[in-house]
Length: 436
Image (cartoon, rainbow, N blue to C red; front, side, top):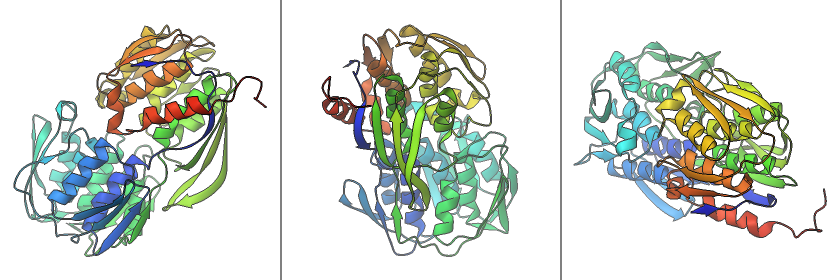
């Protein structure tokens, strides 16, 4: 498809519910006693895979509306092995988190995924679970994964060798079934949605510095979960409004968890004009509204400590850097190479194809910006939803537009992405009606 340039980015919008929290609401809701009502749920191919998985394991999920679910849980130890494998499709969050849950359930479980997910590392999850006593086998370090659950688990203290909220969450969820305390120590902070939701469900969770400890649980109960808008889904529009001259965009009700807003911090350092207003709590998470106005950007450096706070938005940082004055550098982002695609190479290839100056490094990239619109051109998403969004935003902000191949990849996280873009096109005021 061809994504044409946008004259201005103007208007008000809301983005779907946070994907990370939507996954966790389904998984933890399935382990609760009684009913959990989830509002603002973010529907996508990934989260639908989680919905199908918990149904296959015995939980009931009723869909009241497109973004409201009613989950009837089976209790902490009530999941049952289905007749066949659990297809996680492209959802790495599902495969990794549910591994921790199934380690504590009776039965044998097999987890499969699509080609992309089957190429992603699973030993980083399997190894600490084995240390806890779980019987888990991978296929040369990848999916399919087989778990023989129900054996005794013991609490451990585990220092994460790689900054990963998914690995941390898998260990903490297994800790619900383990004797003693289970502690995960991080080298840098990662998103903490699992800890927040387990606390809300009544689990005994203790946080101290970069360590989080959970204890064995006999009963969980959530009752209700309100899911805030996904800051990762808002990010493409934040970057577009920053780069297109004369823009003013408002995004309402987004998740502003401090461990998710690395891109906002980086863009502000580059000179972006982003204002947070109407701050409030949304479902136990910090939230609020954003106003974004166009700005001229300057280069910056992003290091290892900021990578986990920006992991899903780093390709968009690359686009912003390509339009900023000076040389921007990303370091400490080896994990970006182990996503749905090698996002280091994919980002660099896309920017080069559009007239940008970018070079991949072992752990990131270097980009020499040209403080003007990229020319435009042709980008293939390679089936990666984040690269598809990068290409689309590049089209909106370019001088000639972008032909985007495999644009449908956005459905993994944001099926309505292009509908929102068309809504923005329709909301641009005519020339002469603009007031700064």
